Image 1 (cartoon, rainbow, N blue to C red):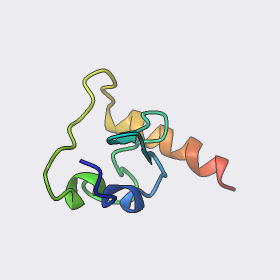
Image 2 (image 1 turned 60 degrees about the vertical axis):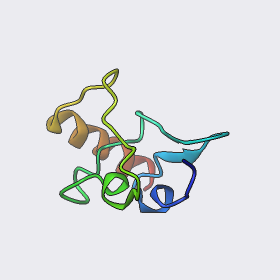
Image 3 (image 1 turned 30 degrees about the vertical axis):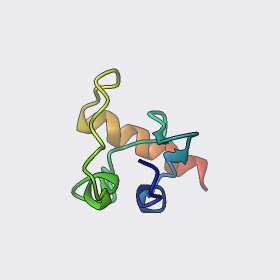
Length: 75
């Protein structure tokens, strides 16, 4: 599905449009840790098609560390 609801909801610009689906880039995705209680892409998805990536399991500590790196990039 390519409905364009998740991309603007992401506070880390981790979602981009692919050819047929939106792509979530693990290097930028923090599952909204530090921004929201739940990943906003999951919250806004009208068809519930967003799952955690089993190839990139991360703890909350790892996600917070990634957020700090991303915040430094934007300053």
